[in-house]
Each structure stands twice: as structure tokens, then as C-alpha cells.
Image: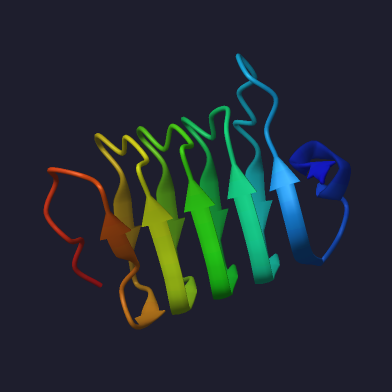
Length: 109
């Protein structure tokens, strides 16, 4: 398993990644492709994903509060046990992310 910050310069993010506990990667993720990726732990609070694609990808136990997905594409993207207060999805295509283990409603595309 790798730390997600090791993939910041990669166009394609594939494999198992972890965000260290008590770490926040509030990075502007642009034009990244998450393919067969499993990312867990830590926080992406305040991040913006713009023009990114998510194929067969899971985000698990990550704080996603105030995260924006703008002009992204989703195909089998699951958000599992992630707090996501204030998360927004705008101008995105594909099937909306499946949210598991949350009281919040499923977001609209």
C-alpha cells in the first residue's frame, strides 16, 4: 500500500492508497484518472476534483467534507463510510457515486 500523496504527480491513480491519519490532502485534483483504485483513511476535506474520472474506485473512511466534484465522470465509484457534509457534484457525467454507510442522501448529477 502506498500513501496517496505519492501519486499527486501521476495522471492515472491505480492500486491501494492510504492517507496517513491526521493528514489532510486538500489538493486541487485536475484531470486525474482513478482506475481500480482503493483509497482510505485521513482527509480530503476542502479538495476540488475537476475533470477527473473514477472507474471501479472506492473511497473508504475518508473525510470528504466540503469536497467539490466538477465536470467529473463516474463509473462504479463508491464512497464508503465517509463523512461528506457540504460535498457538491456539479456538471458530472456517468452514474452518481454509490454512497454506503451514510445518513446523507445520494447526490444528484
